[in-house]
Length: 364
Image (tube, rainbow, N blue to C red; front, side, top):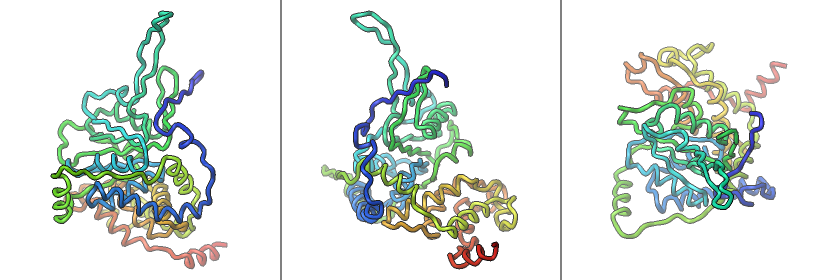
């Protein structure tokens, strides 16, 4: 907008830690990330029992500079996981409990009228909302009306808030983890598919195993409380995010990603019969983008600079499960989206570098 003023309110990490950092040797940093990942998971396990796959998926999304949607019944430590990760990375953490009466200004912030006690001059001052943080837990996002949901999604996309013709930047790293309760749907406002597509991953938290549940009860019913220690900081996270974007990807991996995304669409040419039978709408191009980014991040946090099709398969389920919409036939046969994604991964052949090179030579 014309005459729009950009203002940067203070959040943790505004200082040198979040500015430009000296460029280190990228290969050395990637090699060290394997050790850092191990330390990070060990510190989180001091507080959280199990959920290793969930933790890794959240880390992948964070290092991709993306956001996640987590689905799980109450009491599975969703809030504790996010708070513990924030503590191990020295990041500011805030939580919003979404309710039907929550307004957009309750998230983004509001203008208040102030009077100078000496001059009696009146002026409006912007009070930043909880969205000005590093890690934001949007608890039960489907319990608030679409207008408030849209306000949060705009912040996620634009990394800024506009109020009274002034734009207030949200300092990176900025990561939103939104949760939904899969049981109680009365009085909720489900996110439409276009808004669900803004989330990189849809992570499902399952019940713990019997041994894990015994350990949870043992840890949480005594006076002793474990605490996670600092492992990374904001500057290192930003640097990893930049490196993830620069990691090269082989053409045969890109071809595999494109085949997965296109293979999920029932109207695509040469698609699979089970896709035509069970799927109403398939994944769009954003799914392919996130499959590549997720595979890059998975390779980087494992200490590798090369991306394989195995990395793509490892992130395919949380990336695709909220982008494929099943039809009535699938619902009547008890076929879930996860079943469709699993069958898609079995059906799409993985191209090798040699076969891709032969194909490229044949097209010349």
